Image 1 (cartoon, rainbow, N blue to C red):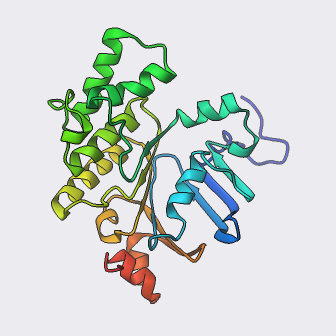
Image 2: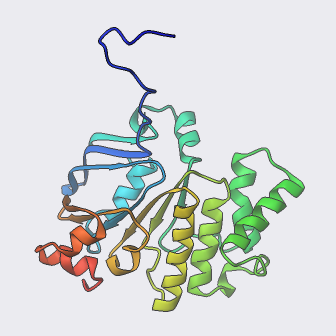
Length: 259
């Protein structure tokens, strides 16, 4: 038998770094300070909602998480790696582990739904032929678009755009998925269907970050929520904790009342 550690404390395996960590992040554009000392930590396999009014820096926060823009001060770490310190090649590798659902889906208009989902596979992997076809079919099937693969984006409804964008975000089977305003522009029923798809990702063990002003829609799929206002996190906790807040903005956002 091995003896105890030298200090008498049994040492376990090293703790796994958080999937996403923002450490005292500041970000400005020209003289407009968008984020002011924002810190967020999201464990692996957790779902996190970031709430706020339009124009409060929610989408900027997502862009920082994927390294599309640099921080001014502080650090953004993905699975323990500081994005600011990575080489271009390593940053690209880190991004492959993150699926991004853009607010407007951002599909390529000149490509079919199938070709849009194929795009990251052809660009970032060495997969070919039947392997790509199988992955694309599974991705489209997971969002209910397996029969719409040959349609062009112009022929899709708003909800189908979101589904196709989500299928493309999942093509590389990333452990982390970021969703920017997934219910934006959708009717209540279609928005609920998109949230159901995101909930299934949570059940599959994905780390999920949802940026939204729709607290009532997202509260059922996240473990924790934070409210961003005037560049700062003003509240953080479970949906129940935020619902009990006496902060008027927090209360309105969690109930989906903010306009």
